[in-house]
Image 1 (cartoon, rainbow, N blue to C red):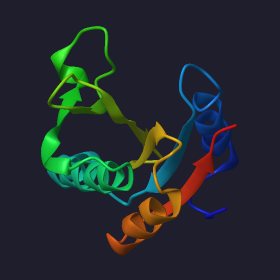
Image 2: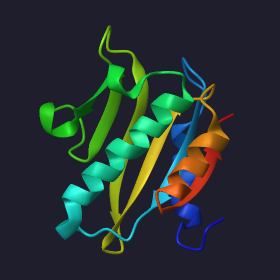
Image 3: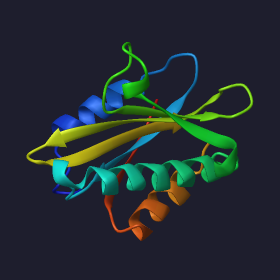
Image 4: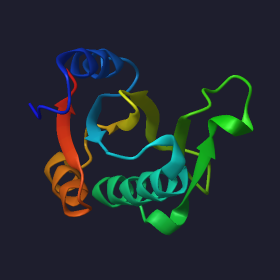
Length: 134
């Protein structure tokens, strides 16, 4: 486990992946981005969302991001990647301010290529931990 990613966050992420209607896996992305760097955080979220879409067999250009600031019933730092044709779930994330920098938790269907996602996020320059659901 990355030293930057604490056990509490790992356990909370694991709980999000508990069995439901669909099997989920996830990642925890540790960034050094602060609230002053929200445009960079936004771009990183989009880039990681595109990686997840590709690993799930969905063209990133066939997706859009639905954000918490669009809906009172959705968290302000919560975003979903949905398909353009039918608004199917591709990924969801929560941007969490922890010790003055953001950690971002993504989750997505378990049939997406977990290794490709982790490697792709590392190539973007972030510390990342894969979390497999049950």
